[in-house]
Length: 240
Image (cartoon, rainbow, N blue to C red; front, side, top):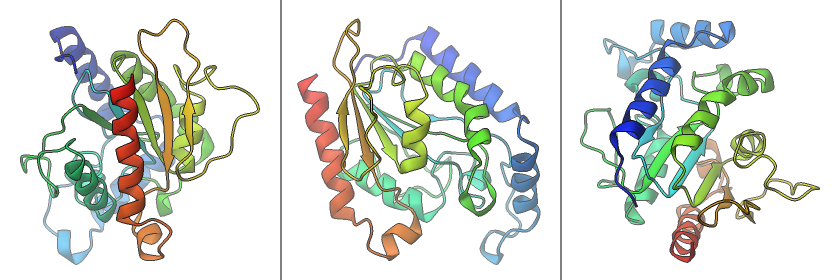
């Protein structure tokens, strides 16, 4: 992994600032603020972030994890991607087991969590009602993801958490146009090497079921299944 230089740091910071100020989707703006005004008992009295959520991690990362959107009382509350909700608990524990994080838990953006060789972002940056962004909202938000990926040009593996993130990546450069048609349907464990002849290194798109509380509780996704995909990402990074 190459260290994040000053230019990359400024670029990611600038993107993150625009994400935090974004109000392009009125439905999502209304919902993120509504959620903050009616917190569950466990979070009453906390100051909510209730803005667009920037990505989190290190520049030069070779693993880029792309989720769906912030949770209303997770990232929308804490101000950091996947922090403070059950999905984040599952994700960060797996990243810690694989050496991409310095700790297995994350409850706030000031809890000392640091990622190594990894960057975590999402297809949509505001908490959506029922955790279901509209396709138009995904497409309106896509340029932020595209800008992040342009800065994160050392990436070897893009890991899509769920079908929604997979669909977003299929429309986002450099993934868009680098996959043979017909495009393969989303599936847990799906692995696609991207056709990027001018790239300095090989790149892959990997897929896993989203680590949502529902998917975990119903048995659709287990820690072992998720670890298998993350281990495969590690193998591909070593091969690149």
